[in-house]
Structures are given as C-alpha cells and as structure tokens.
Length: 396
Image 1 (cartoon, helix red, strand yellow):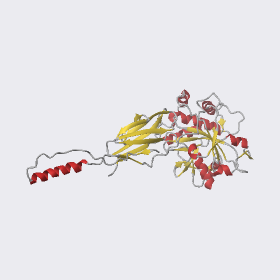
Image 2 (tube, rainbow, N blue to C red; image 1 turned 180 degrees about the vertical axis):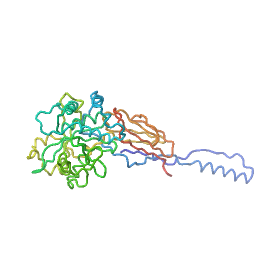
Image 3 (tube, rainbow, N blue to C red; image 1 turned 135 degrees about the vertical axis):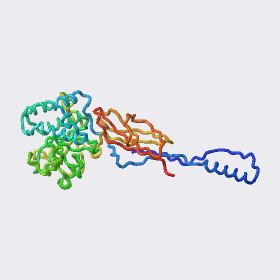
Image 4 (cartoon, rainbow, N blue to C red; image 1 turned 90 degrees about the vertical axis):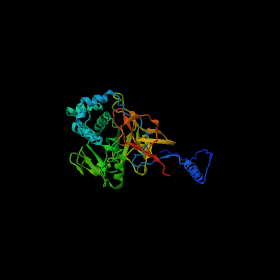
C-alpha cells in the first residue's frame, strides 16, 4: 500500500524588532526579556501529520484473472426474489453470513438429490430448475450450483462456480459442482455446497475451497470441521449421503474455477467460460485422475494455470486507500475490485454517518487524531468490509 508522509521539520519565522528607548537599568531588563520571549518563542515546530498503520484492515488483492460477473441490474434477479418470496427465508435476520446460510438451506429444502437421470428438466436455468423441483423433479450438483449462484447474486453476494474432484488413482472418483461465496462479514471466500447444505470451518472461520484442499493435503482434514445447515451443526458423517467428512474433503483435491460468473443473466444465450487451476507443488507433482484414468494432456492444456494464489483468492468489495499528506491536507485515492459498484462511502469516526464520497478527494486535518472509515456499496445495497484510516499529529 502506498503511504506517503509529510516529512518537513521546523520552519523559523522572520520578525524584526526595534528598541527605541531604555530609561533605566530595570527597563533594560524588561526590554531584553520581551525580546527574548519574542525571538525564542518565534521559532516553533510546524504542525505535521503522519498516517498510522491499521493491521485489522483486510489486505486488498486485485482481480486480474476473472472475467464477466452477473449484471445485478438484470430484472430476472428481482423476479427471482419476488416469485419465490425469498425475503421470507431470512426475515428478521440481520447478519449477512447467517442470511447466506438460510438461503442455501432453502435451496436444499426445495431441490432433492437425483444424481442419475438421462433427461433432467429445466434446461440449466435457475428458475426452470426450481419450478421443476417444486413439482418433484430431482437434480444433481451442477443444478444446485446454478441455483445457488442465481439466488446469492440476487441479493448482491459475489458468487463464483467451482468444479472439483478427488482425482485419486484407485480411489474416489467423480466430479462435483459447487460455489464459492465472498463473505463481507468474514472478509474471505468460503466454500458453499448447496447440494449438501454444508461448508467447512476451522476455529469458527469458514474455509475457501483452496483452504479445504490445504487441510486435506496436510492431514486429510483432521483440523477442520464440516458443518451442516444454517445452525452450522458439526457433522463427521452425513447420514443422508453416507459419506464421511474426510471423503467430502477429498472432493476438493483437484479444483477448477470458472472464469466467467454470468450464468443467470446470460440465459438463454449459451454460457461459456474458461477454467483456472492453481499450479502449485501438488499440481506439478501428482496426476489428476477422472473415470479411473489420467486426465488427457489436451484437457490439462486447456486450463488457465495460475501460480500466484492471490490472483485466485482476490478480494471483492475490499478497499485499498492510498494517501498523501501535504501540510494540513490529506489527499486520498480509493482502489477496489467491486463488481456492480454503486458508490464508495466515508464515515468520520466510529459514531459518524456514512456519506457518499468520490474515489479521489481530500480531507482537512484539524485534530490531534483523525479516524475515518471507508467502504464500498454495490447496486444491491451490499456493503463491503470497512477500511480504517488513522492520521495523527507527529510527536515532537
């Protein structure tokens, strides 16, 4: 982060004084005392300010790899909310993370699992899938993924589709579709599987797909917890599916991220997207198996290989605020990767009121210490994590 400070020191003032008459010794002493006060009091330290690092701010990683997002102005998102009365799913709940889990649980309650059906109805469109699910049709993971993407985006939550598989020689096989959702509350991506209504946590923090992968590679997921439903019930064995926490975790050994996220708003046009993989030591030193055979090199060559993990786990809605201090003036520049951005907002102090602010502006420095809070807001009214900026007078 760019942090430029004012480094200027003392600036002596220039003042001339003329003594016109000294009548006696006492007067001389008084006059000299006055001159001493004026001269030595004149050279003072110019007030300067400095920025104070705030370690609680979430580090900003720009989006450089992912492409098209859902257009939240598309009327189909509002239609989706109204048609299925989705507001009633989380009525009275203020917490963003809990709202997301309640919406995911609703999807699970509406759609039943049916993994093997030669002719699924619905055409891959979220609304058609839900309509047929309400009539009794079952669907597989990809359908749950598409519905969850649409529902979460309808409420302004940045969501992306993920493809995964265990890929082990002689072990579990198959392919699985799910989503990752950006949690503003936790300031991170987390794996959200609507088909099974679950995600993984460690020390109470929801884990991203790559973090789950890390934990499985490290010790087969022994340090993390699989939690199910909106109440986050710990689950070592899912009776509905007949699968252990470890088996679920192994699903995310080989992960691909869809570059484009506009599955819902692009319909009925054909959805097309390349896929990104993390090219780390595990990827380089192991073989990816599907259907009992190594994945063809032609398929592997089709993947976009990214070595920098930060490019995959970029930070939607998170801000970086660059500053420059000149005398009593603070210039700032707000940077973010916020899909469907509506505006940036600023608040003067913890008890201030949020107000709209330009991405580039300036603030007057008048107090011993200033605290400002910044955040992004998208067109759905969802606000990003708060960014704290602290500026104070330099100590002599």
